[in-house]
Image (cartoon, rainbow, N blue to C red; front, side, top):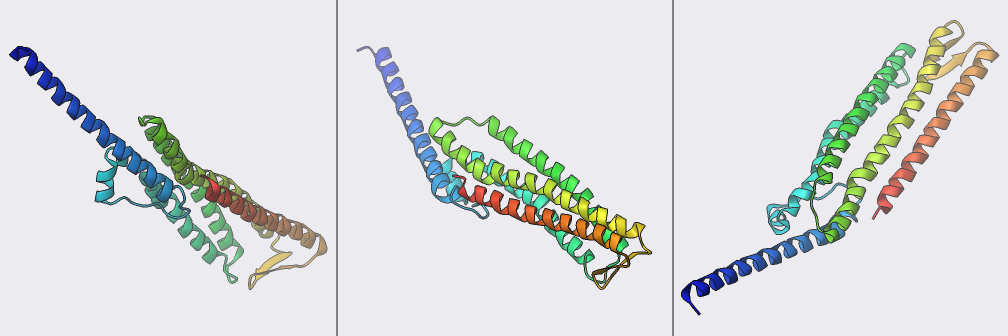
Length: 236
């Protein structure tokens, strides 16, 4: 065997060894990542796990894939969920028994306007996440499990929020309709200590119907929330 051929053979063997080592490392990383998704991420119904440096090293490039889920949840928490909680608290304060009709109306209008902004923020963050997901390159066995994780912690909760916001708007609009009716009939209706007092039967009948409509919307909203939450918990 001449020296030139022997040199080429050595280089080829070294290259093959490096290639095999690289393939083995990728196999270990995707196996570790897949197991993590199956055992730690998909079964969770609460907040998702933030991987440590050790975990990220173990997952290799797949850690960046998981970042899509983490980043989406962080963004939605900051831009949608926390503002929504604050909005609800502020609205509840405005609905205290001693609050006047005008104060209640202003709070309702503010809530409706804020919901529109939160809905837009949710749509934007979901679009960003879906865009990142669409360009990921994954082996089939990783893609199948990763898709389940995305469904559980990105798409399903987004679906829940997207369904809840319009339903909440409907209830608030019904409430606003009632408040406008009360303001338009000040001589017949007033709110005292949180109780609506009416001076004639026809007005009472109209307000009773409005209150029944609001109560029905609230019940439907609560039922819808339970159903969507259950769907998310069962998404595997």
